Image (cartoon, rainbow, N blue to C red; front, top):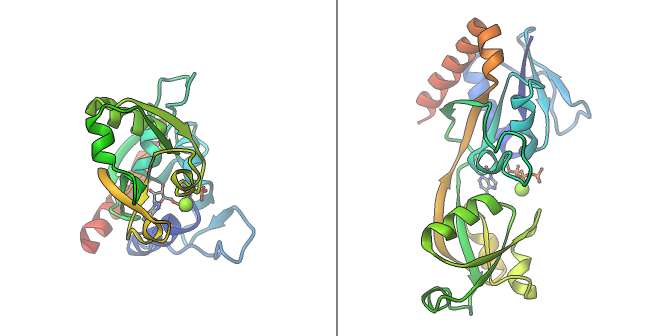
Length: 223
Ligand code: ATP
Ligand code: MG
């Protein structure tokens, strides 16, 4: 049995055309089913539904053989204080699936002069879910920051005075705009990656290789 970890929402939705191109149909709709393990048209392949940020954990520890996770999630995976492996290890990353694309950016209130604050060497309060990536970004720029870890609704932080800036994912920019925020710096482009458990790749080499190859062909065809 091969187990593929996906998260509901855009990753699931954007993965379906790739799975279909690889000849796989998921036999239940996660939006209507309450099941967390979904059978597919291939008796030897099942899909498990997990939180987006849990996909690397499932794959790393063998709860799934492979999975689809955003680069944002992969860069933060295992980087919390006290992480056993110092972060990010134990995952084979063979493929950029080029789905769920967006960018990670710095945003501030419209009336906040970010460039001036940086130039003056002010200490910035930055709220984000992506503390590891944000820390790296500002350290590389030589900007002093106090990072405030949030789990959602980052846009609220500058509006309430919790922070001067946020680091968040942006696609169209309409959420920022609706909250009177402006994007002042692009940190990196984000897309979702296929991740594979290295031990599984050894034990189930043939079927996993075939699946990875089929994904690769599907990505190429979609490009
Ligand atoms: P949860 O909803 O469980 O807290 P999440 O918010 O990370 O998790 P999604 O919103 O489904 O879950 O995002 C999953 C992935 O999709 C993210 O890790 C990121 O790579 C990508 N993503 C997030 N926001 C956008 C966006 N606005 N446009 C395109 N891709 C995005
Ligand atoms: Mg989300």
